[in-house]
Amino acid sequence: MKRQNQSSVVEFILLGFSNFPELQEQLFGVFLVVYLVTLLGNAIIIVSISLEQSLHVPMYLFLQNLSVVDVSFSAVIMPEMLVVLSTEKMSITFAGCFAQMYFLLLFGGTECFLLGAMAYDRFAAICHPLSYPMIMNKSVFMKLVMFSWVSGVLVATVQTTWVFSFPFCGPNEINHFFCETPPVLELACADTFLFEIYAFTGTILIIMVPFVLILLSYIWILFAILKMPSATGRQKAFSTCASHLMSVTLFYGTASMTYLQPKSGYSPGTKKVMSLTYTSLTPLLNPLIYSLRNSEMKKALMKLWRRKVDSHPF
Image (cartoon, rainbow, N blue to C red; front, side, top):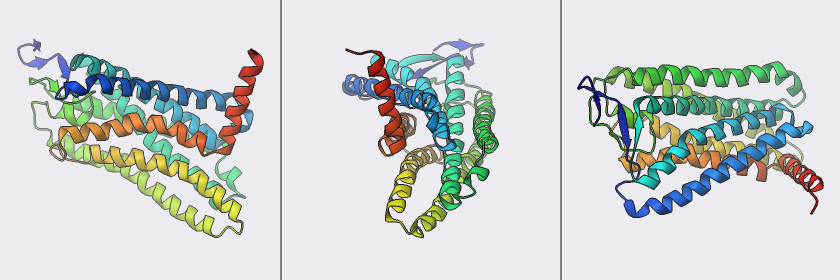
């Protein structure tokens, strides 16, 4: 182990699934496909919304921001994970670990608030359709997006700086694929009780408060949908909201279980699976959920495809 002044760790070892070496190759292949599909799916959504003028409305612009977050999330996590899987274990510098945790928290925090803003947008559109253009105007949209990104930056700055202010004097093996807060914190050579109180409180504010607000929004949306006289209108509203609700349940459920549990709450293997769900599975499924369940997105994708074919005839 490398040491600085005989006491400080200057690199960490990411163990990944080193306890199951026979699975390394299969997992590498699976996550390589997941990463490529995630990049492709989210890139298509970003480009489609950018090029299709009819999609320049809050609902789809929120989705575009979500896709940017998901692409960034994957870029922070997946390349490192693939290297770990291909080598069974891998060293990462102290600074590299800091940077990875910082951007993981930045994009994770931003996604929490973006999903909340998207729920508010659907609430305004379905429960107050006549006044929706005034409720969700360009200024309100920009404020919600900026609030989401700035909140992500603040969360990442405070939490990462605090975690890495603790001394790390060994061991230096992180039983994980990447530098997530809980497994890194286990290696700190100091009393982390105060930080754990902060982290628990912060998780309640960042994850659970938006989640509760989203649930309340959907309760009002459900009542509004049930009052609709048209069966077609009810079906369309249900379909629109179901996509968002699927993403919310998947992301918030696994993220809250990861960050609200005490150090010994789950086995390392269970923690890895939960982390993989919200960092890898959610960015993969979001573009599939939104594009396959939304008629406007399907039309935009078809128009983009026809434009590509027309410009490159066989």
